[in-house]
Image 1 (cartoon, rainbow, N blue to C red):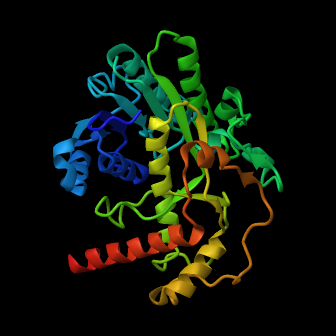
Image 2: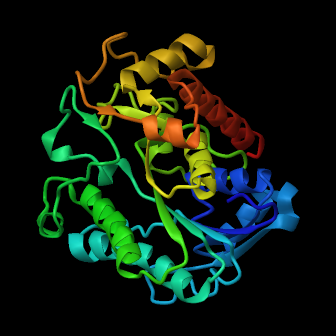
Image 3: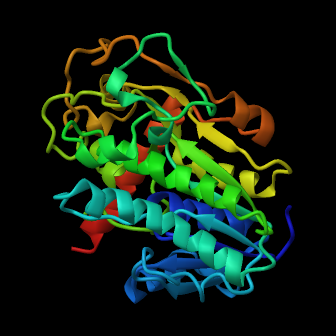
Length: 343
């Protein structure tokens, strides 16, 4: 489906994965229209990718759950990569704060594409491993998760949840809504693929942010380096994937002949393993990173995330644990230098 200088809409282009995805498409000859919540974020994105200024445009979509939110953004585009997701700092009501924003944030882009973007042939939606895994069953040693499986949590269970499973339920329900939309609208001219990454780590895109405003996964790792974490934390989800591989997967899924669901995983990891890696390979971190119990993982045997479809269909060669986390640490150290030089 590759077409030099085709215009691809990337929603949520200012995020951790979004910046890498914008770069991935630009560097492969596409024009990109990226959405962000405000003008400041748009300006930062344009500055970050200034070498592609002639091929990058931005548009503000302040509330992605609003009906018609993407009506202007989808016009004249050839493809859509939907990464934007609604967020809230306070979860007081699972249905109001999680379920409905997740579902509406996904269906709004599909509605606009169906009605106003006749040139679009493929939409790629960023979902999550949380839409696949049944976290209520814990680590499930020996179990193999793949794209055929779905998190079994129901709408009502997600709504009523008080055990921390509601976020995963909202991701499952949002992806389910996307596939349902495609199934009940036979007149749509585009096909749908979804990307389901496990925990996403790796270096933030150069110039895309600062250490004061890190996302969830990046802040978890930087906390091991900045002195705020004195003990090795538990490993909640013991599988990882590099952010650069996630970005590449979106482009390859957009270009692939067959629309599919793709589970992305680079393999196993453990927070103790991360600390051991940093202390062994970056001398400046030796006295900054928690010691813990060297060589002893914080988590026992656990499930496997099967990445064979992504490898075989998309041809992805996933980055290793060492490359992902060492590149991440070096990126943080460079960000510290930039911060210190500006003081």
